[in-house]
Image (cartoon, rainbow, N blue to C red):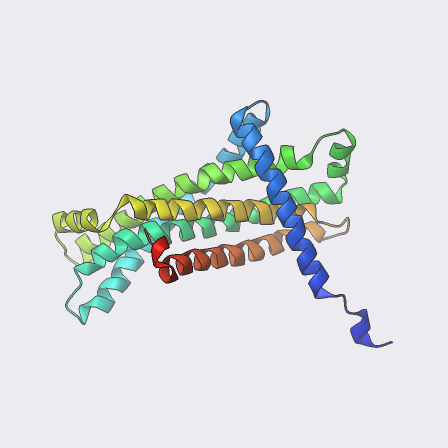
Amino acid sequence: MNAAALEPSRAPVTSGRFLSRSRLTARALYWALRIAISPRAESAGVAREIESLGIGALVLVVGASILVGLIAIFQVAYQLEQYAAQAFSVRAIGWFAARELGPVVVAILVLTRTASSIAGELGAMSASAELDALRAMGLDPVKYLVAPRLLALLIALPCLTIISDALISLGGWIGSTFFLRYNPAFFLEQMRTSFEMRDLAVGVGKSVIFAAIIAIVSADEGLSVAPEVGAAGRAASRAVVNALLLVLAADTVVNAVFYFIPAMVV
């Protein structure tokens, strides 16, 4: 028999995964909205997930954001030095941190520690038939396992993004003041001039999209685990890779919309 005939078709798998994630997104958003409107016992699960997924990543966000701010101010100032325009590096850091660096840095940090955790946990439950037991008891796994994580990330990621924006600016201030010898008052004035609330709104909007991607992709990979050895580990790895690619793709699409459609530029 031709070996090509034994190769599984990629198109049905891809389209099937897209449909399954679309259905999972709709169901998870429905239950997340229900929990947000009328919190009951599930609200305790949301608070627990916020502490685990959000507050647990705070140390990483603090350290990485300050370092990113230092790197950004050094790189931008170096590129502008040949034009004798190093002072404009502060303005660049102001809006670029809010629109791009903050949400992307936070999303990458959170997904590297969260996507594998969600997929691995749900995958282990799927492989051990715990999810089937929940369904047999009339309990929807999406309501009790996916929606609380989705809601927690939708709350935690924007908050972490705002914190990251401030810390990236702090890193830029440290670099410009102690290494580039700018006047601290000059830095604050340039930052005030360049930064606008609409820049923060764009970054926070991105973080909401990234949070949904991380939660849905991770949960879908975990719920799709087959009952076999090592399946949960492979699902965790796929969750990190796929979530990272989709976060970068979503960021590219948002930036392209703002760049190529003038009416959308804010």
